Image: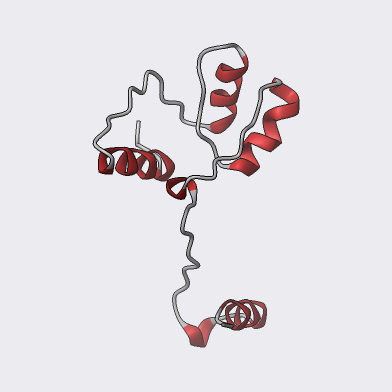
Length: 98
């Protein structure tokens, strides 16, 4: 089982604070993790959009994390400016605005 980017992110921040996580179960998909939480098997740190998607179905509480470590930095990747579609060019122009 390969560690997810989210898991690596959390583990790196915990290590930076001198802490180690006691992860008992790793799931390969978010829905299974939400189902385990709903059955009382512990808690989980999830992307908010995922938690909100499954909250109604599995009936668990969601608390938004406000700590700095919980804020993820995302980026947009692309190969070559010359091969971009018009829509992608508009998106990049908008993202590059100050």
